[in-house]
Image 1 (spheres, rainbow, N blue to C red):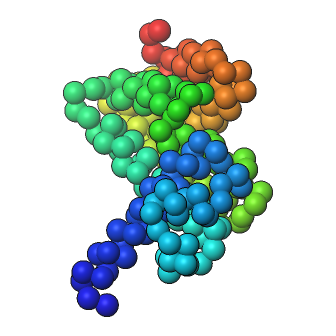
Image 2 (tube, rainbow, N blue to C red):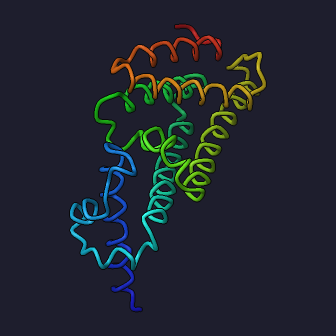
Length: 201
């Protein structure tokens, strides 16, 4: 395979992932057929299996792609030198509130949208979710530990356990926001987060 063909194949695969990303963030996994994704990506149906062995394999690749993008944005935020560690953490959760509303989340809430649904459908997708969410909580824990070490954060809980609790708090709030069609659960989660991190409201 020459370089031009390889680049074209990579571009086609990426187009399929991008289309699936947008559509499944809005509709979920089971409700979306391959035809809808391939039409949106302008890719013939027969070409799909050149890139993915099945819809499940596509779902796993989609989740891996989502978490790669999510973690890159998260790490960029946590590396900002114009913010203190507590400010970086609070900004992360404020962005969560702003991005993952009950309206159009622009793909930012893919893990929330697919989590409960696909964990029971596919072991491969469940493992992708587990890897991705574990990486998120590890980044939160690392930020908390850095804040404690430099003295900008004072927390009473173990940083790893606190990171898990915060992530689970916000994951639950995301589900409740969708159920209630109201952002009050995010406001409550933000208030609880401020208290757990000993930050002023």
